Length: 357
Image 1 (cartoon, one colour):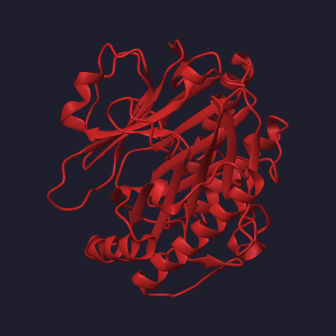
Image 2 (cartoon, one colour):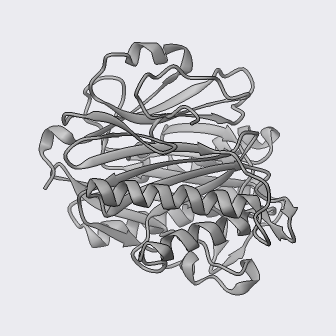
Image 3 (cartoon, helix red, strand yellow):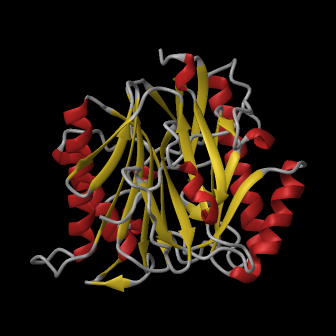
């Protein structure tokens, strides 16, 4: 079991206040979002600068994960990471190189990135990944005879298989979103702890999707459940308006938002079934919401407030979603502290911040 002082805390702050983190030993890592991506001066911290638009009038924002255990920073190839006794957060950015034979540049970059991640984790003794965050531009565009999201799925799965990792059942929570620019950017949180995959009874598991969605199924679980520092924590993957394996409510962003939240509610119920004492609640989660069209932001905010019935902790971003017909995707986490101080409010796990390598 993880020592109590090592519990996670998620802090959301404007990028203009990022400098105040200098010298804070508790910073594990994080991600900053702005358009265009703002260069970060994070010294040895893994800080990912993602080119992604925020609602009009809102300044660049950062999500920063904190951890109470002693931490040290390191580099492994393109990866910046920070680790303690039980947690490791890492980030990397890779450009897409020239085509390599018949393989698309994004597929090649994805496989190389995941190979590097798994090499790092194996060398540091971390076998479990709690969560991946994946960002790359033009996610729905077709190139080299295939949609780019499908290219990404092939490269990701090839790296899992090359390192003897399961591509069904015991897979991490994850998301993959279309950024406004830059290369392939990945952040990840790993732990020396057992993670239980949580699937959604309303949805076919993504790793069992039929071939109509590409030659390789996406390698992720709907959520991951882990006990850290004496607490149950839940990491919910990017969740969209999909029931079974099919997209619902084409062209209706309000209905898609409600369907997203029905799916998240089903995941939360399943997590509470697996961890009866956790008592995860929709109004106690930290959310990150990706909206395809900026004009839909107000509708998505309204639908979330009405569905959940209470104000929530949420970051809203404009991004393309993995299927061209999907207008919104929601991810969430719970069971950890959230806030700028030591307040102990159950919510979610955190991403790390890393400058492009």
